[in-house]
Length: 381
Image 1: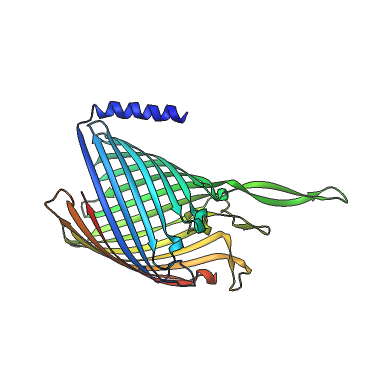
Image 2: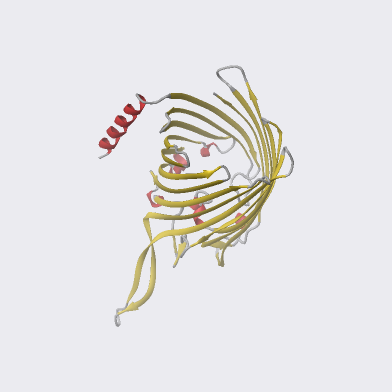
């Protein structure tokens, strides 16, 4: 079956190569130096110097009725102190677009492999993602997008974390003559850990040799999210935006602990969006100093309720509460781009970011502050 699909793709691409009207190659090399005084986002507050370097090469082929883009992205994350965390990822993707006067169809697919050292090889994962988006633009003032996405993750050394997720999304954008814009977005997502089940007990049967009755339910959750972004131009070079939104479980959350049993989830490795429900508000001020010179400053306040995860005390004992975090973020971003007369690099961009994050929590392990400085550059063609 895989050979037939691969052969069909080769035939399709070969036919397309003989009918395209333009061809373009893009190359982007990016490198960031990061100073993080709380690398692991917990009360241990370990600081690190981190380098994040990535290389992206893409090629576009196009015609009036169809465009195809293929790309490869390599990403390397290097830690100065805890080198056991060093990792790399490799991503191969294809995007196909059928443009229309007011309706465009976009199909995407990518395969990504993330690799860690032997000590942390349970992080090693392969991801396959497929997506379909419809973009409807009846006029310059309105835009409507609808999409569906499927994501499959396979952990090579820790199959308990294997999962599949689905997402249906919709977004509407409205632009007003008063230089006001409104973007509304809604998503429904489902995530299922396919190699694990939760055991739920609900009574007993029998006489002297009574047996407990139980059922095995999938470890999965469905989340509904909605957000609104309102932007307003307040001067020829300055704009302000207000964001509001949140996400909520539709049904039961993913259980990381139930009836004395712990279950593995990706929240054990990182802050998985399917592990909590939240509400947030953000405010951002953007100034365009020049065509290629931009600055941003902003704040974000967020409450996060991990309904399927219990809070622990300082000794690691279970409490009667679920974990609840309140996050406050303050950030500054500056970007400057330089155009050159060379073929490569045709442009050079410089970045500076600063973020201060506070995360009060009823679980002392996740009660922390964090300062992050980032200085980087990118060269492209």
